[in-house]
Amino acid sequence: MLVFAERSLYESIRRQAVTEQARRAGAIVVMGAAEFDGNPSPVYRDRLDHAFDLEERGLAPWIITTGGSGGDRHFTEAGVGRDYLIQKGADAAKILMETRGQTTYQSVRAAAQILHKLQAHTCIAVSDGFHLYRVKVMFAAFGITAYGSPVPESPIESDPTLRMFYSLREMANLTLWQLHIRV
Image (cartoon, rainbow, N blue to C red; front, side, top):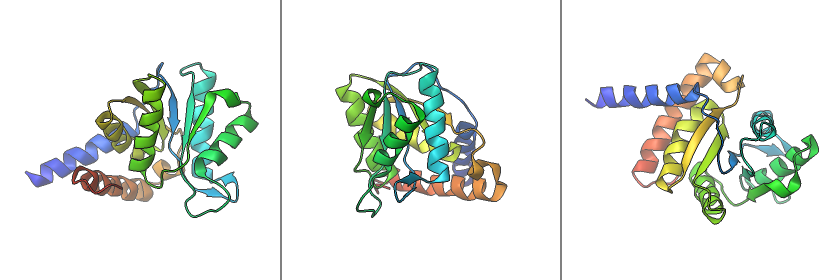
């Protein structure tokens, strides 16, 4: 039975990874990724570009960028994301930041608090596909319905070895989270 449960979780992660669910929602939440000296990493830039495109389609009134400093004393992922979106032409007044999260759990929890303050109960979660199943489960735990919107042409999702590694890692991370080990 355990083998079936593991296969089912892996299949759920993979199914979500390739399912576009973007629709009208209270906000677009961009899951952070690395930044380097004030510039988004290629993975983060792809997430931000996708969020920008969703906002341009008028799917949400707000964009929430997430991610703390990751050890950088000068920049946060959320701040770098906000600056990048503004440079692309996004309205600065529509961008909110969650700047403390060092883990997916911390970022989702803080983003959910922002959504509750906005009286929003839905969001479009933007990340690489492998990450979205866990993000959606975590948002649901905070009373938020998240619609997954995977980054098109993600370099991680395009490489079969990386895709499998990151999907298996998501299985472990979700299992740890369900055991109340917050990652």
